[in-house]
Length: 249
Image 1 (cartoon, helix red, strand yellow):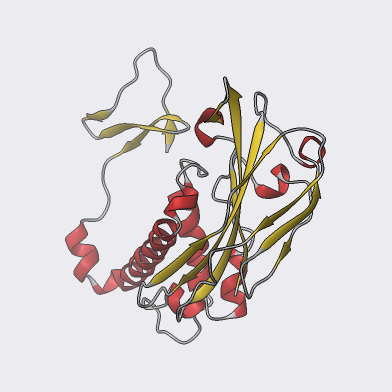
Image 2 (cartoon, rainbow, N blue to C red):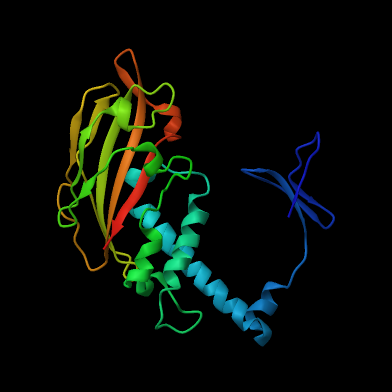
């Protein structure tokens, strides 16, 4: 893959060269490769078919998780979230030590301690990780999903983006079954605080414990706002918002 520098921003194909745009700029690559029909049928590409099958399954699992938490992640994500989450789900899939090659999957892998590890501490916005935004300790009750941040002084215990006047905290308790694709997402109360020197204990309690036959996910979100004429506006479309998976059980 090569970078393309020119006065002209080209997208499309020219002879055997493809020009396309990414988040990191314009790229170019040559056409070619093995035909899809050969990959599907040639015994020489058996390993390729197995890898493709597992990759597709991991991507679907990542999509399932993103959709399950859409109410929280919609304004706390980066442009490469889908690909980053697919990579993590592939690590989870690798913890499946019982399925045959080509059939290993997240639903089995995540039931193991090793399979849960890649998702613990996962940040949905790589440009704003929770550990860099929230400079205060928190406690989690895995039975109720309640998150408590003791003695939070916003102007001391937060990495505050320029222009922010208020900060908002919320948490989520999700039960997700990657096999049956059933989910139960319970959201907490929302605590909105002015960014000043007043110490506050933030208590976030989901409406009810999430139920189901899958795995339990516990999430914490920090969002920033700017108040203008008594109206709060999301700061820069959520660029500085953080959302993290605190724990997977």
